[in-house]
Length: 146
Image (cartoon, rainbow, N blue to C red; front, side, top):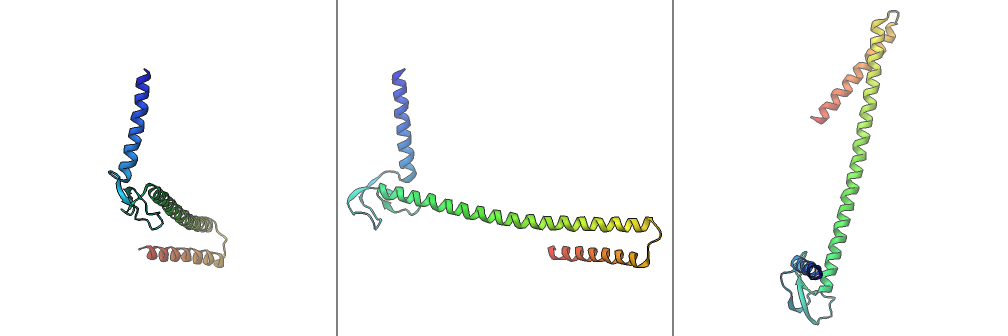
């Protein structure tokens, strides 16, 4: 049983090493790091996944961190854009809901005037004008979207 456990640890270590190095490079080469900040000693080089430069492990890890940071910035930027556009859409929907509520009130007022007698010509003309305005406003809104 003990051998089996040790073999598993070795397998996991080898798996990690294979994954890590295959992710960044097939096989390390020996040479000089192409990063200008490097100390220019002969070292093992790995091909960077983002720029394809042959660089030392230290600079490869720096490139990975820079890449992670850039992706986070990109994600934060697009997330903020989504938040902003969601708020914009939400305000448009709220405005439409308010317009619909106002138009429902106009319909109810018209029904009340239709069902009951005793309203003045001015009251009837006023609600008629408001309803016509609402209809015109809705037609203009539809033309904008078409």
